[in-house]
Image (cartoon, rainbow, N blue to C red; front, side, top):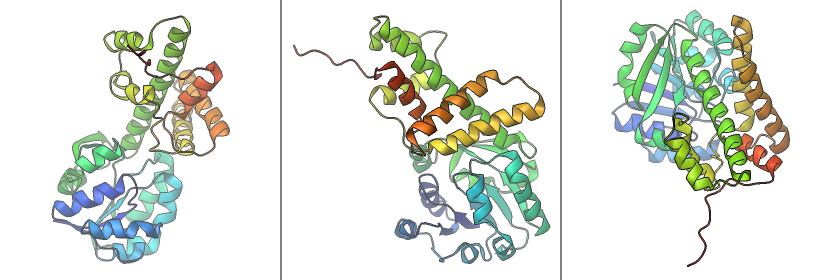
Length: 299
């Protein structure tokens, strides 16, 4: 069992904290929001009061933070120096290859190994230990720490070297947000053309056009849930990172640019609100129509 320093105990890190404790690891957690202390203590983890105190003597450092800026702010030399000799830093945040590169180099300068393992899944998946991890880094280092990762995830995929895990997560997000927008446009058009939304969604779910979004996430939208589990500003940043990567590698990205611009417009309209489907809300506003389950008339 490992001594784990967990930095970030919000929607995802909070449930993960409890799972790590139940798996038998000694967990020392910290978050910049002090109101999260009681939930950490009630899960059986320790709250030492600072990131440095939480890291002192730990052999695994986990960061579960919203994005690159939060990771860079949370981890400085004093945190890395406090870790046990031969420790590993596993960044599970929604980071980017370019932003994480200096973090990895700083870790190496302190003799700390580094793995990227951004998370796929919802807070409910985190509570159930059903997360998916997209891992980039040395395979041998991953193998040595699978016990820790298996406490929070049931699918751990090694993508390759540094940058591949972050990139895979960004691509998954690009396609999901793109599918959500394309599905919303199709439903708005179908509704305007007089097709019953219930019938249309059933047709799409059983057709070659079906996606995981249609089968799993569309019911939430049709119930009026815009999935307030991630900030629109962070979504915009991730989509911008995808188009920057495409420009760097010289691959076409016209569709990715369209998805990015839509979310930038939604951010301008709604501000940095939580809502993974707020771009769909913007499309609804433009159409003057809400995509909702049809209300059955009274008998």
